[in-house]
Length: 75
Image 1 (cartoon, rainbow, N blue to C red):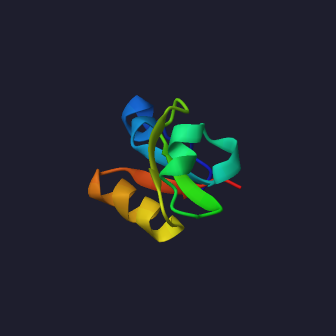
Image 2 (cartoon, helix red, strand yellow):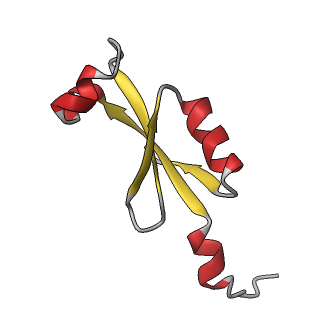
């Protein structure tokens, strides 16, 4: 069973990518709000646009699910 299936653009639009971000790599105004954290998690849409920054990985996945997105971890 190796039949190709075209999921279409709708499926791609529902993917959200979760990746760790070092606070030191973020703009100074965001660093000031990080409350001493070393790492945050970014949620990106399929085009790569950052949708959110959150405190931990579980929160990023939960946020994606709450917005009807399918989260995928990026290393």
